[in-house]
Image 1 (cartoon, rainbow, N blue to C red):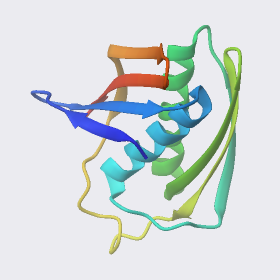
Image 2: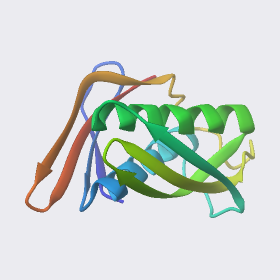
Image 3: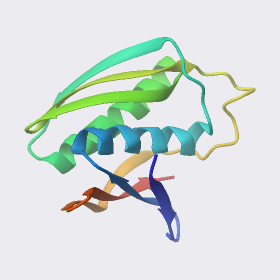
Image 4: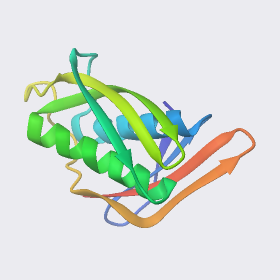
Length: 135
């Protein structure tokens, strides 16, 4: 996974790099899970997520918000994602393990995904994303 944390006064700002938009979405979701829960192990609990939005940025925010919601409501720590984007729609299979307070504590609670400063740029080598998580 290729991401770095950038300076921010109050929240968590990341820059994520990936070769494709599919892997960019997947890697960003896993980075978010690492921030909240630390390292997780592969699991056997899976969810399918299907979404559409008016543009790629909204699609990403909706996807990350759905993962955050599922994680909190169904107590799943996601450790892998396979994402397929077609236009402004996606289908993703996310897999993880049940939340275990002994192994998954100590992270930073993310309250939401912010539109502020959101930027997806296509470069020669792939995609670069700047994103802000509200903590």
